[in-house]
Image 1 (cartoon, rainbow, N blue to C red):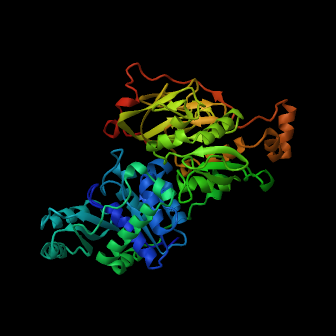
Image 2 (image 1 turned 60 degrees about the vertical axis):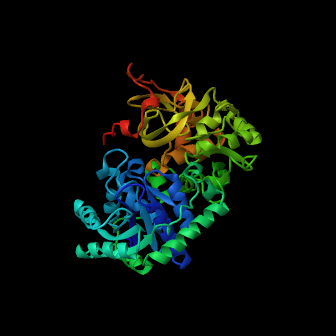
Image 3 (image 1 turned 90 degrees about the vertical axis):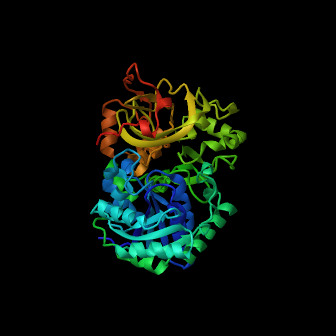
Length: 513
C-alpha cells in the first residue's frame, strides 16, 4: 500500500481553464515549499512539461492506452514518490476519450484507478443556477468517481459568485475557489512551441508559471484543496520500478559498468523530448543518458553510440533543425557507422533529405512536406522487421500527431504496419524512424534492445553466460548484433485503403482490446 495525497483537475470539456489552474495549483504549492508532482492524463507532452516546471520536478503522463491500465497506479506511485501532493490534470472533459472508450482511457477511468478525488473546473461566464444541475449530473454519472469540489472560473461579479455558490450549496457541493474574468491570464507560451520553452527554461515560461501560481493562490483555498487531496485512500500494490520492469520483461541484467554506452537523447536542460520513463529505463538498462538539444547543440555528446529523438519536439522547429548543419552531419555519420538511431515524431522528417524544402540529415531517401491537416490518434502497430526497437511481429500501441507528410511513406523495410493504413516509416541499418510516438513503460524491453544495439559484438559476447557462449560456438553461430534488420512479410493494406491523409480523430476506429 502507498499513501499519496492526490487529486484530479478536470472540467466538463476542453476550454474551461483546467490546464492553467492545474499549473497554478502546483506553482502555488511549490511557492509554499510543499513538494508536489504533476501528471497529465493522455499522451500530451506539452501540458506535462508545464506541470513539471510548476512543480519543480519532471511532469509525467498517465495514459492507459499507451502503457496498459494495470500500470497506471504503479507509474503514479513511482512518479509521486517524495512529494506531499500530486495534481493530475485530465484530458478533454471528465468523461471524454480520444478513442471513444472513456471507460478505458478517459480521465474518469484514471481517477477511478487512482481512487483520486476530482476537482471540476467550470467556466461559469454564461451560467447561473443551471450550474448546479450540471455539477449534480457529473457527480452522479459514475459512482466510481468522487467529485470533491468545484472551482469557478471567469466569474462576472461578486453578485454572480454569490448566486453560484448558493446554487452549489443547495446540492452540497463545496466551492474551492472562484476566479474572476481576467484573473487567470493567458500567459503560457503558444502550444505550437510544445514543451520547448520548458526544455530551454525560457524566461517566458518561468514567468507564466509564476503568474498562474500567484493567481491561483489569491483565488483558491489551498488548504481545502490540500485537505481534499489528503483524503484520498492508500493505493494498493507496489510502485513501478524501471529496474524491476526491465527484469520482468527481459530476464536479463543491465549492462555492466565497464561496457556502459553513452546514448544521446534529444531534449534540453529543462526536459527531454520524450516521456521521463524513457530516460529511467535506458539508465536502468545500463546506458549513460546524455541530453543533446537538436535546436542548439552542434555536436553529439562525447562518446555517443546511439541517438533517440522522442515525439515531443514540434514540427514548427524545422528551420532550426535544418540550420544546425554540423549536428545533421554528426547524426548522418552515426547512421553510416551502423550505430542505432530511434526517431519518433519530427525525428523522421529530420532524418530525410529535406523538410519543406530545407535540407535535413539526408539519412533516409525521402522528403517531407507540411500539409494543411493534422493527423492524430492512437495506432496499434506491428513491427514487420527486427530492428533496434523491436523484434519482427512485436505489437505495441503508439500515438501520433503531425502535419508533415513523408514521401515515400515507408522504405523497403517499414517501421510499422497497422490495420486500415499503409506501412509507415523506415528501418535501415540501425535506424528505426517513424512518426509514431511510444511510451516505453508499456514495453520496457525496448530500452534493453537499444542498449544492446550500441554494444560491439565482442561486448555482447562478453555479457553471455558460459553456457550461452558454448551453445553458440557448438552450433557454429557467430555473435551478431541483436538489432540486425530481418525483414518479415508485410501484409499489404486493402486496395481501397485511403491512406493516412484522410484519417483524423473523428475517423479512427477504436482498437479492440
